[in-house]
Length: 241
Image (tube, rainbow, N blue to C red):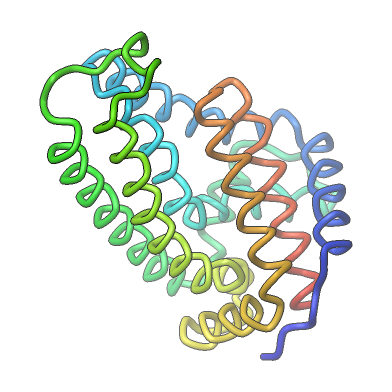
C-alpha cells in the first residue's frame, strides 16, 4: 500500500473539511469529546490540588500518546453522517465495533508508551522538583528545578511521541476502516511520514500545539478534539484514497 504525497495545501484543506464535519455533527461530537474533557478536568484538578502544578504540562502532553486510540468514536460519527443517518451516541460505539481487531494491539502500544512517558516524567519530577508542593503562584518566576523538569520532560516526550506518530498517524485510520492488517498499516504509516517528512512534521506540530493548548485551556478541548480528529481523517483519505 503506497501513500500519495501530500503538502501544506492538503493540510489546510483537511482542516477546513474537519471543521465543516465538526459543525455538521456538533451535538454528538461535543458529547464524545466532552467525556475526555471531563476525565482531563479530574486529572488536572487532582494535580493542582496536590501541588503538582508543573506536572500538568507533562500530563497534557501525555494525552497525545493515547489520541490514536480514541479516533474510532469520531470515525463512527463521521461514517453515520456520510451515510445520511441521524448521528447519535451509538455511532461512537459502532466506530469501535467496526474497527479491525488489530486496532487494539495498536492501542496497547499507545498505552505502553503512555506508561513509559508518565513513569519517566515522574522520575524526572521527583529528582528535579522534589516532594515539596508547587502551586500556581510559585511558577513565576520559574524555579531552576521546574525549568529543568519541563525541558527534560519535553525531550523525553518528544522522542516517544515521534515514534508513536510515525507508527500510528496513518495506521490507526487504516485499521479503523479495515483496509490493512497491523504490519501493513504500520509500514504504510511510516512510509507516509518519511515520504512527506516536512508536511508530516508540520502536521504533528500543529496537532500537538492545539491539543496541548486546549488541555491547558480545557473548555476548548470539546471543540478542538473533534475538529482535529475529522481533519486527520480527511488528510488520511487524501494520502490513502
